[in-house]
Length: 200
Image 1 (tube, rainbow, N blue to C red):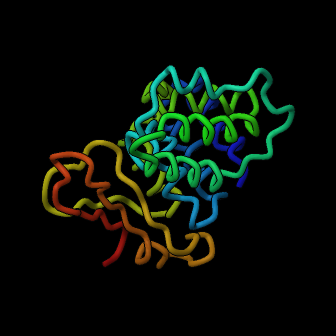
Image 2 (cartoon, helix red, strand yellow):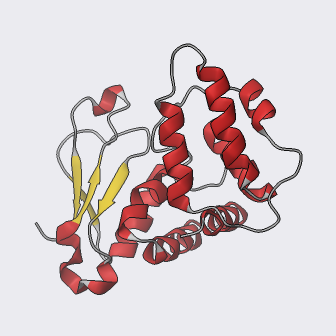
């Protein structure tokens, strides 16, 4: 899936006022995503990289941004996530220069809209009205089931989903392979919890 599709969905969600309409937009997008893309898509639409904080500041972002954005969208969602994963593991001496280079390569392939989304995502400033609770409902709707949390407090910050097989290809039993799990980056999430959808 092209990263551009997620950026477009985010823009539409930000422009939409009604909660149910926002949920419909996110659910429709998630249905189009491949199973291996769901975790990343949910994270981005919730306003945070799947990797959490990756040690990037405004100085590196400014230095990495190229003079001109890409003319057409070609970036894959998986490519963006893989680059953020590399950035998250780039530490130690010379890491600032390495991060600037990695970001520069990513930004060079991104359109203006994609660059803007990435900056806000990395800095935790994404304001699109797709908060974790709303995305939770959208994920459940995409799976054709209703969220039923396990015992314990609700996890925060946004949690990620593992979607083994697209529900549209599985029918009503899809929820058996559909789980919501805590990222573990919060004190409330010190223990991994799950939220199952539908039948056990």
